[in-house]
Structure formats: structure tokens, C-alpha cells
Amino acid sequence: MKLLKVIAHLLDYPREEIASNKSEIALMINQAKEISPDHRRRLQQTLNDIYDEELMDAEENYTGLFEQGRSLSLHLFEHVHGESRDRGQAMVDLMAEYSKNGFEIDSRELPDYIPMFLEYLSFRPDLEAREWLADVSHILALLGARLTERQSSYANLFESLLLIAGRSEELEEKLPQVANEAPDNTPEALDKEWEEVAVSFSGEEKSCGIDSPNTNPDQVRPLRWKNSQSPMDRTSGGESA
Image 1 (cartoon, one colour):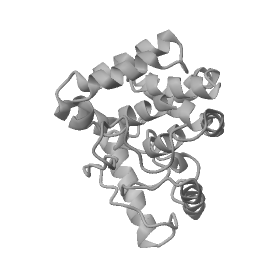
Image 2 (tube, rainbow, N blue to C red; image 1 turned 180 degrees about the vertical axis):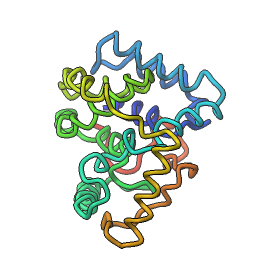
Image 3 (cartoon, rainbow, N blue to C red; image 1 turned 45 degrees about the vertical axis):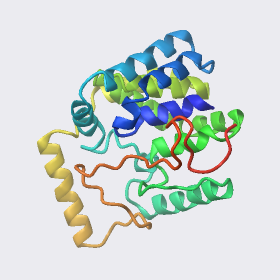
């Protein structure tokens, strides 16, 4: 399902490589049959919102949304297991699933990074991809609702994923839940989070049970695509469905 790769690119850290292929991505969105015409227009708007501005501004906006605080973390298991050892086992299991189907990770990102997960699904049969999305729809809906609350066009990406999964109603159900959430990306909230992390690690009480890359918010961690073709044709293993 090529649309999942498109969404993976839009949800990943903004890159010049994608900006230079904007017209190709726009064409693929227009040709997508998995979502309604209205959702195609919304995805086009998100594409424009990201890549019609200066790349540095797009990067700053992305970092402000996804790299500060945990409520909009793009790691699936962060929203289920936090930093517990259960998260480590879940990632080991997901890595085994990738490996079993010939999906090779060419990145330092953890396997539960949503853009990577979507790229994997883009090479699986449509029914299987929809089932996987349905399995994590509660997380996708939560992220979509939080982005909607922040009036970010990135919410359109999660709306489309839920539509593909057949779970579009879940986003509306999550909106009341997030309406009263305290923001976790303020300086005060970030200071408190770092204090809690420092206390936890000094006592060696938490571990995700898997080697992690540097999670400094200032560290750029885009996906790394193999081959030298158009980014829409690049793979990290597996066959296109």
C-alpha cells in the first residue's frame, strides 16, 4: 500500500530529499484509493504545510511537536509500556516480525518508530496492513486527537491511518480525553520530566531492555533509505504489496 509509505515520509523528520520530490508525492496522494477525496485534500494540505515553508522552519516545527515531551512521541510502545522492560520485549518481538518478512532496518531508530512501522506495512498485503493499523488504532487516535487539539495539520496523517484501519470514529472518541490534558512541552514540564529521568536512572530502576539511540531532542534522526531511486520507490527490504 504505497499510501502508507507516503504517510511515513510526511511523518518523518522533514528532509530536502522529500521537498525536492514534492510533486511526485502529491501525485501519489491524488491517486490513492484507500481514502476519501476529502482526506486526499487534507493530506495535500499537510504536504503543503510542511514543505511550502523553509526547511529550517519545518524542522523547528517538527521538533517542537514531536521531540519535546512524551505525549506526541512517535514511538508506539512509549504510549503502552513507557520505559519498562515490557517495552523492550515488545520491540524484540516487532524486530522479529520485521526480520521474518525480510524487512531490513537501515537506521538507528527503534523498531516502534511509527514512520518505520508504516514503511514496513507498506510492503505487506493490504489486509494485513489494515489489521496491524487496527491493532494500534487506540494509539493512532490518541496522537491524532492531541494534534487536533494543537491545531496541527499533522493530525490529518493520523486521520487517514484510522480511515485505512476502519477505525475513524476512534479519533472523535479521544478528543474529550485530551481536551483537559496539561501540556507536557512547556519549559516547566520538560524540566520536571528530566528531573524524574535523572532520579530514575541514578537508582537504576528503569530500563527498556534494548539498546537505544541518543534521544536528545536536538539529534536529527531521519529514516535512511537504501538505493538511489526516487524516495517513493526506496525500501528497507521486503516486497511491495
